[in-house]
Length: 484
Image 1 (cartoon, helix red, strand yellow):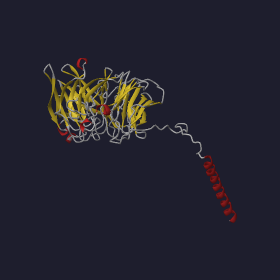
Image 2 (spheres, rainbow, N blue to C red):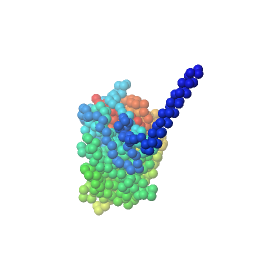
Image 3 (tube, rainbow, N blue to C red):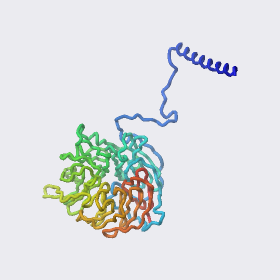
Image 4 (cartoon, rainbow, N blue to C red):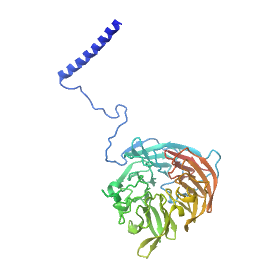
């Protein structure tokens, strides 16, 4: 026992002598040991980029995989090529499903959100939010395999607000344009991901110190970009109602004065031809407007009305024919029919009728689909006896439903997406159950349904590209084979 105590005492004394020697040497030299700066990446740790209030849009790029098999299919923007949410692809689709449902071809994990995909040249594009990195990320996947090909991203610190991402990219052979949750716009090469240009709409068009001048709406940006003849068309609100940017250079080539102080909504710009005039129609917060889309007077404000102005709107305007449009508001605001008038020298807009969600066609989130002379929608949860049902209305009558799925067939909170291909209608419930209907004039017949994923808040718009249906819930992106 005594020997063990002596041994511990000798060890402690030795340690003290070593430290005393180091201290004596340091004082004698009069300077510290030669230290070198640790270089990020040289110690096998991930490189840490400095974060600041300055957001550099599209700053980082990761190459992840090589492109594999090219497969057919195209869904190049919000609501597809014709902006009607109807696939015109001639690929034969299955007429029925067995009990196993459509096959899942691939699946990948996402940050929480509701952003939908765009598809072009065998690639799937999705604007995601990485919660760990606190970064917006434009992700490019192979349509055939789901392999992530590349990722362009940048830091932007967001607080969770019913998820993060909401918008769908617009893509052509030459350009890919996105809008992030805080109104950061970037344009890249769709094949290589090369950065072409960017613009911060909040910084460029916001009016400092005024609530009405704030660009980004509550729950972050929901407006999807539009590429029209190689021009990116956006509706920032604030200092400009609408702008057009040259996709090649990023230069603003026209902008529309915001005389009525209309603010950005979650709705998107819809091109329409009314009275033979091509125009961009937009339902913002504070009013609805039409802006010329023709070369002779591009960007000119043709008409506006503030008579329809719900506090929140997500669904985009619909052209009903007969120089009329339908617009929608969220949280029970319902809808309205607006007539566009012309005297030959100018245009004006008149709200012909408006109704609450309990009294007619409405949509809190998804834009209804026009198929022939009928309009299809899923009514919101505050729509009275028809709440959360799939419904059909005539274009000529937005007040009286001609068909509904019935109270025994309700769909979550009435917020899930639906899409049409030929006479087929696919509807996704909030929790990841997919319904397959066939349209027969003004009603639908249920063919099959299948719980595709045990998901939550499956609200992101779907896409059909060839034989593939791409869908998501709050945290997963799936590609299904719905082909024949």
